[in-house]
Length: 348
Image (cartoon, rainbow, N blue to C red; front, top):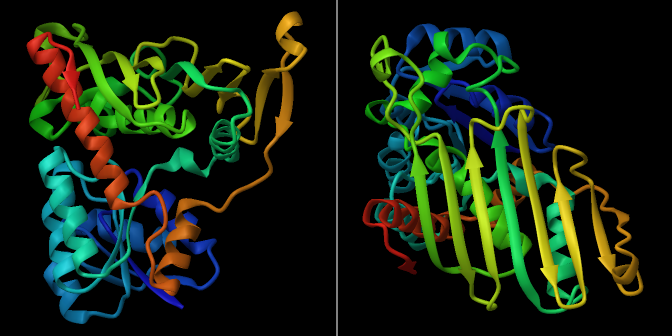
């Protein structure tokens, strides 16, 4: 049985508690948070007996094998390094860190310690993207020439998820002073991974433009200065020679949380739309190219990141998505910020 502590009891922690509770051979034995009220409420809701208001106190107790690190983004680096030093396996929320240097340090540290380190790139849980990569890798659509990927949210124009103007969960994501790096830092790691994983090729060059739109009087609501980017457009070159366009925004009215990918090759094309169905994809190939007919392929199910992490801890070997993968993605995101700042194309 893998004994798990959940570090941080904010918005995403509930998803971790539910997901790990559903995994065989895993037990959530404790939680920790610097906010006593939030910690107590979390323990009560998920039936977690032990709680700690300090990481050091939890480590002194030591009754766990692994930690789900669900702290705010800037806290991932110091807390994860402390956990590694204590010999604890870590399942970290994305992004692994807020810059490539910190992410590389974390990746190198956990590998040197021989511990399991994985990152919660949640859309790897969709069987459609796993199948898409496999089809591309086997040459089903020929040589890849063009890739199109998008991550579309609309919580700045609709109340599907709640009113962002009155909710700290949303407001901190709009404020750099509160640790946000905007839509690029929040969901950019997902869509960059989605595009490069699905295309079975890494990004080697990029150009990026970021935009922050006026959303309130004086660009401020209470303590939150609304200065983080809201939209990102990225043109990329892949290692396999293909070109691509990637974009993400919180102003995609009509879409709650849509990831979509199209991969175009010399012998066919694949498209994935997780908003429509995360367990199927569409393909156009062979004679269908002349009639532009798309066929649906059922993709079944795959193990979740949570289940893979538990299996990795039990087996003693890291599975994907790993710290190393997340560190590689952070290099791309850092390149995006540099490109926007300098107005230059960045070679990675």
